[in-house]
Image (cartoon, rainbow, N blue to C red; front, side, top):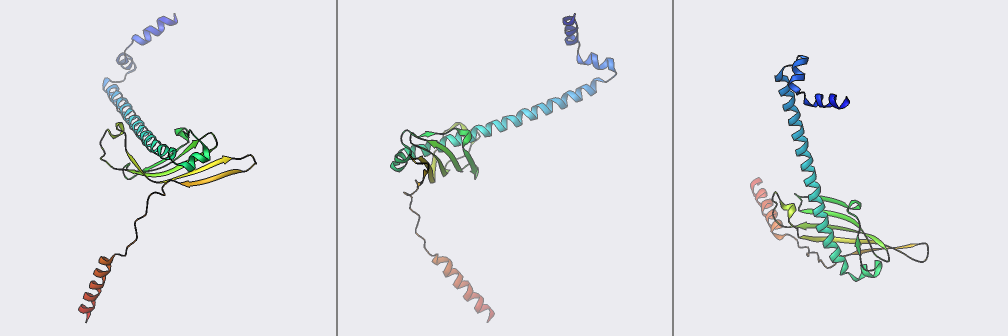
Length: 196
């Protein structure tokens, strides 16, 4: 009996239910269109958020892979936490992107047989942005990278190391801008000659 009622309820059309209750078909079409518009908007919004999350995950994977490659070649890090160095889970990482996703600041946990740590880096990428740039792997250039490593000892204290991996970058030498000083002195001379 319950099955027959359910079948008869499913077979009845919305228009017949509406006409029996006194509502017009036009009102039903308007409500139907509004529901479809809201549904489409929510689907588009959800898709955009999902694509942004996938793009952030690709950025994190590219940057952290480059950092892990760089750290595996650093003897000080290997001596401190040992080999192999394993990257921690992505959900414990911090990622900040800027300048239309051309620069990134990333912090993520690492671990080794002798200790744990956190890698912090700032990186930039060159290249163009397209609609489907998240499908390609990106080549990130690490500008600044530090490792904060915690190594337990036999005593109750832990040893903490800070290792900078960006020491191989030399800062450009500071030079005074002679052109600007020369232009300023000329403009002051012109102002003085105009006032006299």
